[in-house]
Amino acid sequence: MRKSLTVVLISALSAACMCGLTLAASSEAVEWAGNGYYLASGQNGFLNHKVSLYASDVLETGGQIGCAGIREYDPVVCEEYAGSGAGVVRAEYVYSEPDLHNHGTKGGTFRGFYY
Amino acid sequence: MLEHHTPILTRRRAALICGLLAMAGILSFVLLSNGAGSAAKASTPSPYAAYPALNSTEPSGIILFSAPSQQAGDSGPGFPLNPPNEAGEAEHWPMSTTIRRVAVGVPGVSAWIAESYGGGVCALAWDGETPSAVGFSCSPTADLGQGAGVELRDMPSRPGEVLKVGVVPSGTTEKTVELPDGTTTVVPVSGNAWAYLANTSNATSDSTTGSRASKHA
Image (cartoon, rainbow over all chains, first blue to last red; front, side):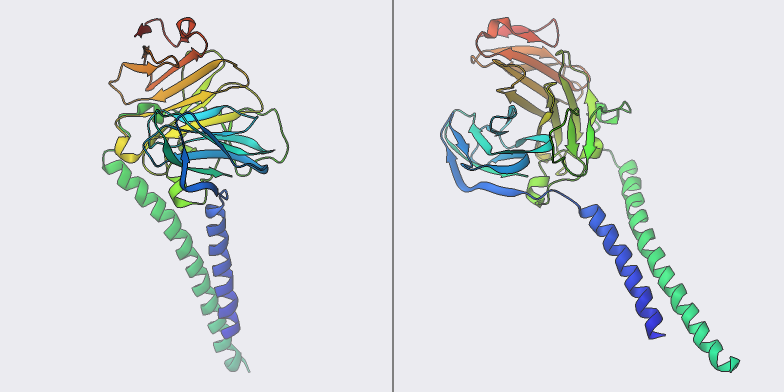
């Protein structure tokens, strides 16, 4: 009886876990710019070393227009409105570095992520 | 002998049935919770009612991938099926299953509208280059009525040009766009979307998505 119950419970838990894992599969975000990362108006910021990545995005936290890109690969992508956030996504990994750009008229702080 | 085994078999059967019922319960919960969400959505006005472009049934033309390829390919535009794993970040990302194509008049450019995981609206754009890179920007929920816009700069395929793509609620017939030289131009809106391709070196030779574009100092 106990053995049967154990088998059944393990089966049920396994099924539930597999469901959960399937639903939760997602990209690993790395926050490379944060904690008051400041850029003057028009200034670019880089990670300063190459990593394997397929996406880069920005969240501005200081009321300016933020842009994100993958250096030497893709367009730099900017938000139209401050606070929206913006990003660029490729269908494949490249070996490069994420970059940020302050497209606003004043200095501001930004958070940058790559994936 | 039989009398001794029968209760054990019965118990095992009961345990098996209990287990199966438990699994069925889990499955039912998952399916019903999705269904209940749909039903709730159907009975309350959608916050996206002002964006009928989100209801398009046309193929989006964007490939949803569960994992990026390890090798460069010549595939068309793609987007991750699942959001980033950081909750705060995911709110600013387009919900992949809601991505719908919108028509823009800039040759070679594709654009999309989507809901964001955080309840905002998103604009996505691809400059037509392969391997592809899709740019996106999503409004916060509070700015759903404002729309969203994305700007692609330093495009390898279009040196010296800036592509602006945006989505706005129904009732908006034109969009004032700021040009690289600081002037503005008015771009027509069609199907919740607008787009503009600007030349960074000479803004007066810009092409637009429509014939009604005009420039304002």
